Amino acid sequence: MSKKKQNLIEHAEQLFYDHGFHAVGLQRIIKEANVALMTLYHHFDSKESLVLEVLKRREEKYFSILKSSVRNSDSSIVWSLSVAHSDWIRKHDTNGCMFLRAKEEFSSNDDHEIAQYVNQHKRSLLAFFAEVGLSHSEATQLVLLFEGATALSETLNVDDVTAALMHSIKSMGLHKVK
Figure 1 (cartoon, rainbow, N blue to C red):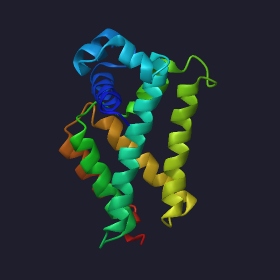
Figure 2: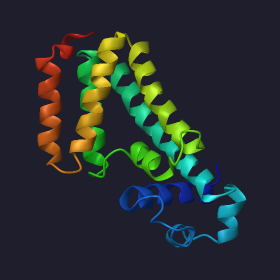
Figure 3: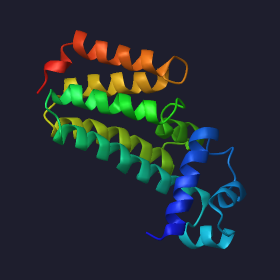
């Protein structure tokens, strides 16, 4: 990937996360990324194609962190995943889930490409948890806890939210899942 394309994606991701997808125009993105409009259109057919690429890159980063936590775990899988998710929401401020925000802004119907991508992202998270050994019920519980923690981090102190997440993992017995 070219440096200019990477730069566009990184700036667009931060702007979209901070301000919303529809609130940020292409002019602002190219200004922040210090590239020409033609450069943007060389890499992306439309703003929506840029949004999809941002979501794909964000998903890659998130899953990379989760996979690394499982590989490097010396505790239970669920505990390691929960620590990784807690670190993720601390690192990425407190604007909630970028995927759900994208679906809210682009989902006039479920056939929209962005809405479909978001739905697939959530299914991929469940599938990943199953791949690492969680039952369907455990995977669903973990996704619910992660989604809730991400959403609450928008309105409550993120350290309190992540502490509550870890407490919930323990009280539900999920920390024992190897």
